Image (cartoon, rainbow, N blue to C red; front, side, top):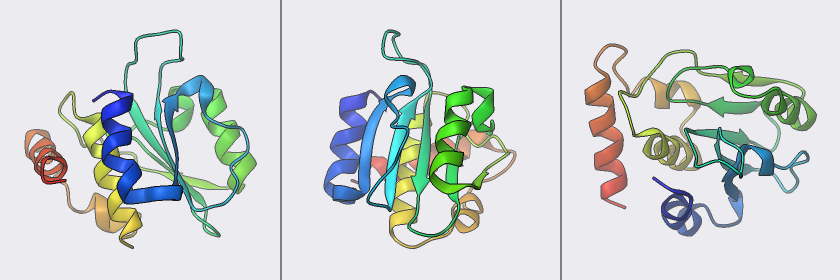
Length: 147
């Protein structure tokens, strides 16, 4: 999915809670008016785009970094860690790969909208099979296609 497709699916459903859909170098250093979701491409704006990840900044709880590939934020950019620490002081992230391929944007939509519905991170992650990544892709593709 590209930036416009992601924003088109998320903006009407998250409203002001969607901070932005942006490249890595446009992720704001300071996040205000929490809760906020940011869907961020791991590439910078001068590049074509590589992989989508999600930042969630709740009002009071630690921030969350979601990556369907299961990588920690520092795997991509030191800036990601700096933004998480500056806005939360503590953060969590998932450590298991969930996607088979090409569905990172759909995984971000699935995670964001289920967090918005009130599900916690572990409940969302428990939806997925740790071995059958093709099955996981079908879950998020079906979910996004019904929006």
